[in-house]
Image (tube, rainbow, N blue to C red):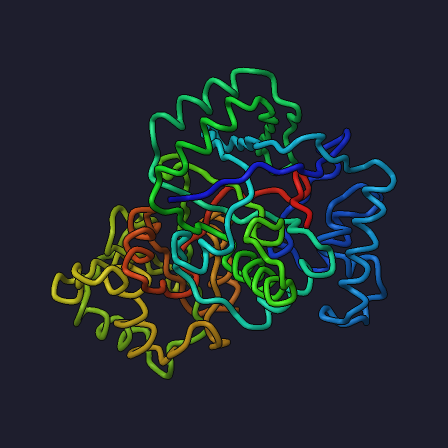
Amino acid sequence: MATIKPFRGYRPAHKAELVASPPYDVLSSEEAREMAKGNPLSFLHIVKPEIDLPQDVDLYDEQVYAKGRENLDKFIAHGTLLQDRKPCLYIYAQTMQGRTQYGLVSAVSAEEYEQGIIRKHELTRQDKEEDRTRHIDNLRATAGPTFLTYPNKKEIDDKIASLTAQPAVYHFTTPDGITHDFWVIHQDQDIAFLCREFAKLPLLYIADGHHRSASAANIARRRKAENPHHTGQESYNFFLAVIFPANQLYIMDYNRLVKDLNGLTTQDFLEKLREKFTLTPSSNARPATRHEFGLYIDGSWYTLKAKPNICDENNPVAALDVSILQQNVLGPILGIGDPRTDKRISFVGGIRGIKELEKEVNSGHYKLAFAMYPTSIEELMKVADANLIMPPKSTWFEPKLRSGLIIYKY
């Protein structure tokens, strides 16, 4: 069963549009400083607290985490964030290009994450996991939510639809054109209904936020070890999540740029590709279906279509397009063995568009680009259900969840 837990959230007392910020991991420190300039209410002061310290302070210096706690305490003391009087659930909706996704905001179980009821599909990096663990530990709060999903369920859909028929408590559109709406669910019968329906779900899946989830689980283990009277119901056993039905999510392509041809000429490279792909000149850069790739090189686009013998549909990881490209092109032909660490490859989220790939190659910074067909949510779930790990940079979810609309405090 999947446990959801109402909680007394801290949220903006007013001017939510000034408080809400992009998540910590999509902005550099310099970008965050610029975005927060002149806005003391920006939640970036809490999720990117280095912006309030001298620029020569290391990102992982203890001062950074202390400043985050100091800033959160100020937001609460000054009334920028107020705590709800009773435990509630919440709904967070985002509308982008006419599409709306409705997520239930709740606390979820760190123990269920450890047990695999909340399923993952990515490895975490130790440095990033330690950073978020220290951030949560110092704040005594999860300030940025984990993005979860589940196979949609009509009873939940219908209840969410009825609750969101009422006016939202927050409604604003950010400069990127995304509209954000937020509702508070405070009626006991509505909360009980949603808790019962989610308890009927066998699993939840992490869409985005593996480092947040792992870090919250680290805190739960640490607090449990320190508490001789541990019951499992303490607030540290749960963390903040927004849970969306899978059929509402939008996964974009996650494209690749490569700096050189590993010593090959363009003609030699194309000939090697033809051993495992059909290769045709194309005016359409975007792949039309799974196992197709767009290739941009020397000012021209090609369509690559994987030959059937290299597609292993029985293995949910091997069947991913990112795996097919890695195992048949990036590794054996271009010499990129580990895309996590190789400096010759870069990744470009689909939100930046195909023109970004052309621009980078035309500038000479990169030799070629691969346009990918988006990984589907069904593929993600298959990998997670098999307890396997997706290759890096397999999925790009849009829109991103804003931080600061709700905080779960320990």
